[in-house]
Structures are given as C-alpha cells and as structure tokens.
Image 1 (tube, rainbow, N blue to C red):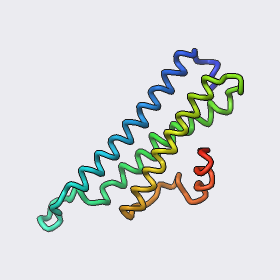
Image 2 (tube, rainbow, N blue to C red):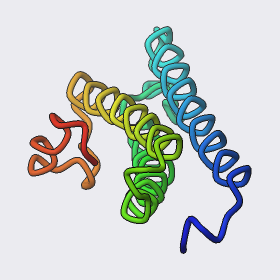
Image 3 (cartoon, rainbow, N blue to C red):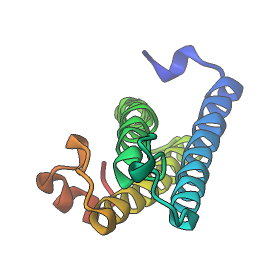
Image 4 (cartoon, rainbow, N blue to C red):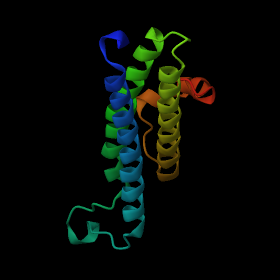
Length: 136
C-alpha cells in the first residue's frame, strides 16, 4: 500500500489509533501482571483452573507480540520505506510509533525473564542488536 493513497488526515488517524492500541496493550498487560501478583491462593489444590498461574500470561504476551507489535511494526516499516526525508511530520509520527513499540517490547522481555516465560519468536536474540538502535 502506498502512503500517497491516503490523505494526511487518514494517515494521522491510523498513527493515532496505532498509538492508542500500543498504550492499551501496555495498560492491559500491566493490569494483568498486577492482578496476578495480588492473588495469594492457588486453586490447583481444589481441582479448579488456577487463572493466576504464571503460564496464563503466555497467551496474552504472544497476542500482544503478534497483533500489536507485529502488525504496527509492519505498518511502520512499509510507511518508512515510502516516506521521503522531506516529509518530516510523517517521519516523526512513525519514529514515535517505533519508539513506543520498543518500549512495550522491552516490557514484554522483562516480564518474560522475570516470570520464566517463553520470549515470543519475534524477539529472538538476533533482534537484540536492532533493538539497541531503536530499529525494529
């Protein structure tokens, strides 16, 4: 898809809604971690499903990595290839999205490490060098 096929207004609406999606994913992730950490009783002994088990975070982490980070990263890469350096406003908007994506990626990595969860495939160790440069 080409950026010149959108109006400037549509472009900024897509960027704004992508930013909202990132913020919402970050908020929901933090809320789930806080809720999980506040649970004191394990339901395993009663035979019920333990919804506070750390393993229950893995599907959420995988979903955020794929739907939020993966899709928005793909959008940013596509747009960045098409933007000229002279289009400062659009370039700055994409850079802001990339910065926010890096922040939620770092949060996910930290959560996975601290809870012994599997790091999503998109964040393989080969991705570490790129993340240090804020490239996605």
